[in-house]
Length: 130
Length: 136
Image 1 (cartoon, chains in turn red, purple):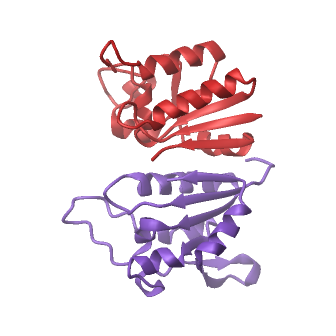
Image 2 (spheres, chains in turn red, purple):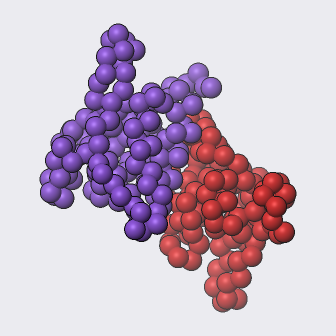
Image 3 (cartoon, chains in turn orange, green):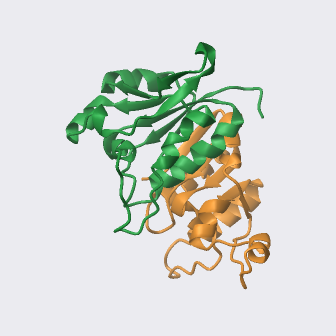
C-alpha cells in the first residue's frame, strides 16, 4: 500500500514525532511504500541539523536522516511553517538574507501543495499530532 | 491539477488563538483549494470558536485571521460542517457565528449559507464518506 505521513509536532516535546518515525519504519519494513513525509506546524523542527540531544537519548533528527537515506524517502518541510520557525536551506538563506542554514540531511523545503498532492496520490494519509 | 477527485475533510478542533493550529490549517485549505478536490471543513470541540463573530485580537497582539473564513466561498470551499453539540457545550448558537456564504453557480449564483449545522451522529456519517482527513 502507498502511504503518506504528516508530522505536526516537534521532536522531544511531543511523542508524535517518535510515533511517526516508528510507524514509517514499520510500514517500510512490512514492504509498503512511503511516497512522502510532510512536516508541518512545529513538526518542521524534526528537520534542523542544529539539534543536539544528550548522548544517552535518541537523536530524532539523525534518525530521520538515516531512514531517509536507507529508503530514499521524500521528506518535505513546509516552507511557510519553516520560515516562521527558523528552518532554513541554501535557497531560503539567500532569498531571505539569512547568514546560516540548518536543514538536516535528506530533508527539503517545499510548499503546502506537496501535502495536498500526498493526500491525492497516496492510498492512506496518516497524520501524527496532538 | 489532478484528474483524480477525492473527498478531503479538514477537521478543526482547536480554538483560533492559543496555538497556531487553526491558522496553519486555514493556510492548507487555501492552498488546497487550487487542487480541485471535493473539500469540506468540520468544526468541532473548541474548533467552533474559530467561527465566532466579532473576534478582537488587538490586546493579545495576535493576527486576527477570522476575516479569511469569509473568503472561503470565493475559493469554492462551501461545505463548513459545525457540530451542534460542540456549540451547545460551549453556550454558543448559530447566531454567535460569522455569517458565511457562497454564490451557487448551479443556482443562478444565489447566495447560500456555507455553514451547515449537524449533530454529532450526522458528523460521523459525513466523516464516513470521506477519503482523506487533515486533522488540526
